[in-house]
Image 1 (cartoon, rainbow, N blue to C red):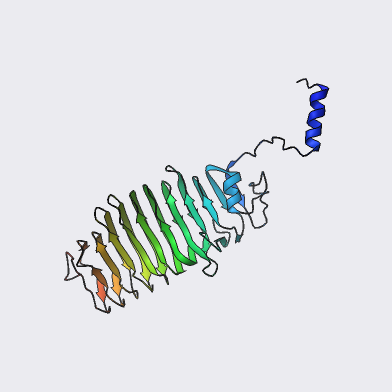
Image 2 (cartoon, helix red, strand yellow):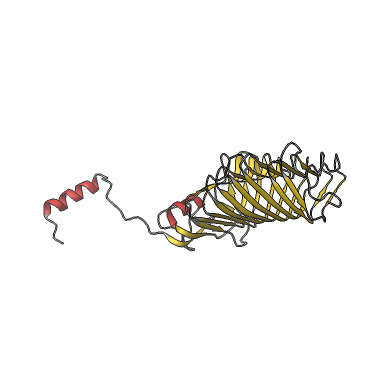
Length: 319
């Protein structure tokens, strides 16, 4: 291409003066790496030149639908997720995602986006962080093999305005001032499974519900422990016109205020579960409500403060 002397001279003068010359953006990759020894700079992300923080890798290095892998133990900072992505620690050591204000992980993903988190230590740094994980949008959220601790407002909060599916498994939520796990619908359908999860030393193990007509929450709690919390082990609440149903199978809710509490029009299906030594009641269906507890007759509720005030329950003897 021919460039005349005048054009070349002008270009040279602009460059010398620091004029912002257009530069091609670095390409993103389907798989990138972060390391405690990495550097957040254009082009980072390869195993030999990893990024330093999750946020930089998310914003500049990984493609939508891609994966961010942890190379070594380190703290990787808080992250806001706005696209489909996986963040994976496959056992290299502690991969810290910490917040000293706000949330450690905020998920504002698209309606078709899936977010996957595995092997992360999500910390609030002596209760200076608000929530461990907050999901307000996205198609699917998976949390596996994580620890969530030391937050001032709550552990994991799934509170979308639209539909979302989720799975939380093999995860510990502890030392949280608010509820350990919050599942709330403000109009959409929230469906998910909580499997082999422990919430202990929180303001309430798991709270789920909807105050919005048309809101729907349907959750399976299996092989889970919600014990030694300041509030209830499991709380279900449903406003007028909302649909809230939980299936509890092999759940332990001991040494809380109430083991299981139903408010409003919520429904619980309970099997092979234990509700012992709670300060108030083991299982309580608020009798001013129209909620229903379905029992398979193979549950245990004993040594609670009021033993067990079942309220409306389909099978009371044996529970």
